Length: 267
Picture 1 (cartoon, rainbow, N blue to C red):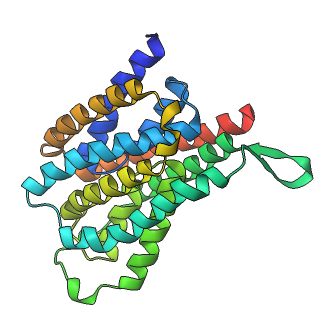
Picture 2 (cartoon, helix red, strand yellow):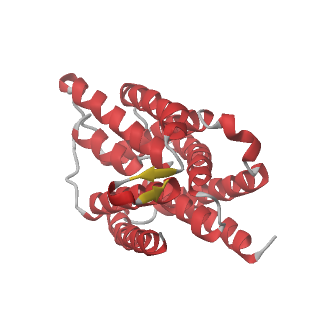
Picture 3 (cartoon, helix red, strand yellow):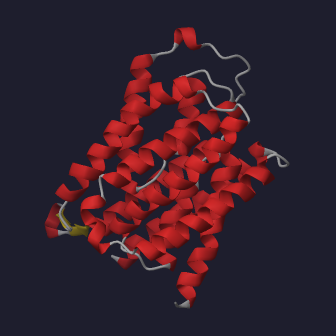
């Protein structure tokens, strides 16, 4: 085992800590760690990320449920369209994309580069969501939910999550707050269950490639991430979530810009 793999397994703990503390951001760390530190192909890294983040989010969601911070009804309403779209994206859309995508003027973009560029743009969008302050919703009102908007948002999030291997918590939490009228703390807990379900279902869509998966790497990384979830959940009870999310947002923004520069200069 070389140094880069050892470092990757250590960083896996920080993936879980992020999920445990702020309910999102796990895949924002896991995919770059897998690709740039552990030298995993980006297409395979997105599949690994779905399993890692899905398993870790499930553990975190169970912890939040014990604290009565999960709205299972809204998780189902929002989660079902996300589940369907993420599965279809992984099962059919991703295999349809050619390894080399022709663009204008005989320029070809590699599939792996496209995935990382889209992932970087998602990171930048997520960072802006984290940095921007959100008003806390004091009261839940499930009687006037815009189900059509929730359906469309769920399909969009599932498609993005399936393409880049992200759990989409940074998209799910704002949707739960503003579309489903959910208080911040309960939105974090509810999002973990949605992330877990859609990520693991998305991973199932990748099982046709199971023969090329490094299960040892995947299971060790996932174990580290799960350990991090317990640590993050413990820290989250003692630290101000808004300040932590803002600081993490700036970090994610810088990482997104770094990936864009690296991929464009490298390609």
